[in-house]
Image 1: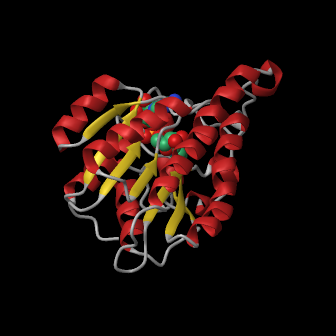
Image 2: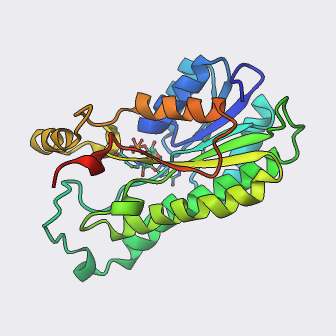
Length: 260
Ligand code: NAD
């Protein structure tokens, strides 16, 4: 898909972090961007800056998501690209492989359910409402109708102590990628999922400098935390390359290669 002003895009979680970086990068190509987020103040400000549209939405609500798509489509037409970044982090922030954070003993079902409702159900809700619109579009030159990019996490594959709820929510996004991609491939809609590692965004605010430094040092190369620009450039590549479909791609500086 060639991103230019003929393309409409939706980015959830567009008011912060990876979503914000992605919305800015997509807008820089000339494509029209709608930001979906709960954070109205930041979302409106970014949308204004990049010439996009802001849609206030809680991704846990069918009605709010439908209304957000209606607003975005009225402004820009049916989206060809949807990037699911809205999400929350629950569990520990300090990432210790040894410390018991009490997640199991606390048996906090409300927190577990909220995490899954936002990260997994919210992603599916946006994805399915978007796909239903995409399949009605005329195919582009190469036969493609649209692309959906989801955000899971490396926690889907190698979650740490204290991350059961978060890992389960992201594991669901990871696991649903292939069956949905198989289904939508028949309609010319691609579905790919990115598994970020440790990305420096407001989600990680509060992590102290010592922990940041030790995490960066654990990444063999390039020995730094990930950035929204790293994520955004992968989204642009996924858009550009029609031959990538049904993939779950780690974007983590190869943290698994760290010596143990
Ligand atoms: P962030 O906190 O900077 O941004 C998340 C955005 O999602 C916020 O603007 C927030 O308002 C929005 N949001 C949260 N709940 C919402 C809801 N119910 N409805 C609508 N919007 C909602 O976080 P980020 O670091 O940019 O994370 C983006 C995605 O990447 C998340 O899904 C996160 O789980 C995932 N991720 C992040 C990291 C990381 O290290 N930062 C690592 C792996 C995966």
